[in-house]
Structures are given as structure tokens and as C-alpha cells.
Length: 126
Image (cartoon, rainbow, N blue to C red; front, side):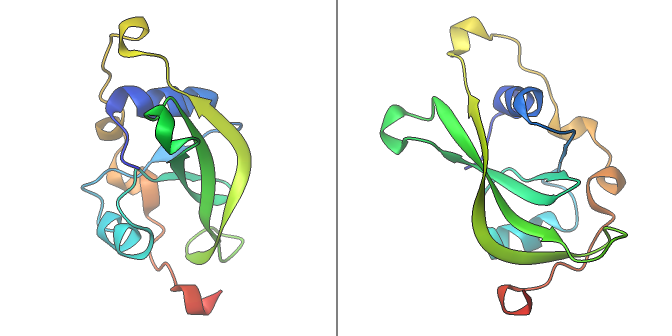
């Protein structure tokens, strides 16, 4: 799912390890969306993650972090698609009234920080 800037920050605050958001303007963002659908993408030391609603009927009050690609090499220069794997991290999204400040998180990361790591391989290359 695509996250608002507030929900991006809430997700970053609740992740187990540091991560960066892949900006929609990054050259690889279109490739990621082509492989995995329209999502907000997070990169960390384990690979590429997305957030899926924990309960679609609950209007997105919580999401589960799902790993969709892992680093293909020790230098972390390429990603390999993998079967979606729940990371065990659940993020909660407080109501807008309790979190009124909208921070432009996705735009705060230069594209080179998010993934200078191009070269994701397709699902058949796992």
C-alpha cells in the first residue's frame, strides 16, 4: 500500500532497524512497482520491504512489514526478488487527530541514498 508522509514517518519510527524510503522519483521506483505493485518501499540492511494492511477491513489502522526482495550480494548492490515474507514487525497508525503534523519524509532522502543499488533481478532469478 502507498503510505502518506505521516504514515511513512510512523513506519520508520517503529521499524526494528534503520531504513530509508525509496522516493517515488528514484530511477528504480518504477521497476519496484512493476515487480511488486504500488507501494511505499523501504530499504534496510536485509533488503526491500513494503507495508500491507494487517486487517483490510480495519481501514489501515495497522500494517505488517513484508520483505519482498533481499540483497543479492554482500556489498548490497543488487536485490533479488523473493517470495513475500512477513518480518514479524507490525506498525500501528494512530488516528490523524493524534498525529496532525505531516512531515515530508520521502523527499528528505536523496535518491542516491535510497538505492544506488540498482539491478533488481526478477522472481525467476531467486
